Length: 142
Image (cartoon, rainbow, N blue to C red; front, side, top):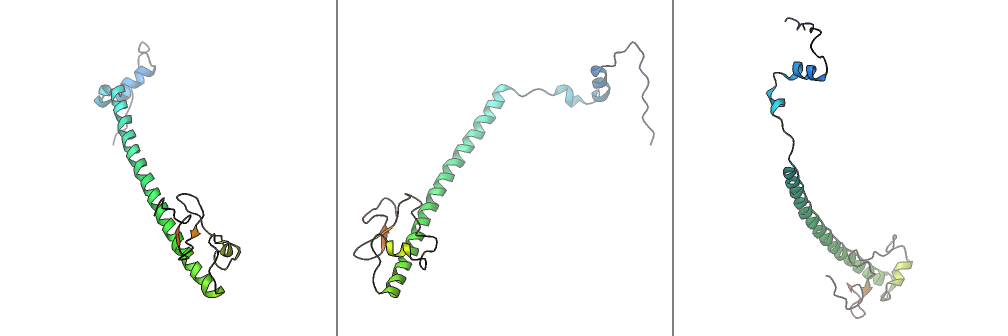
């Protein structure tokens, strides 16, 4: 393999950046035909990215809402199980606002959860002693 040798330039040739560009990129036609990005192309790309972001955001908010409703159902099931355990241990039902269970860390050491959908406290149905909503008769969500 032979080493590439550069010939010294005559003093009459400008040795500035244009000269370096001509020497280095003279054989690369790609750099000669390269054009800038047009404004309309940039706007189209931004619009497409915005549409995709809106679709993902709408789907994300739907998933979050469904997860909150499922967490609410799970919370109600857990509270119903603890209410029945309270009845077995104490021989009486807890109060409708669940204040008996709140003060006792045997049932909910971290406290009774609140609804992740409406951020309200759960209450018992006075006739069945089951959590049916947040306030007795509330049907704002399942």
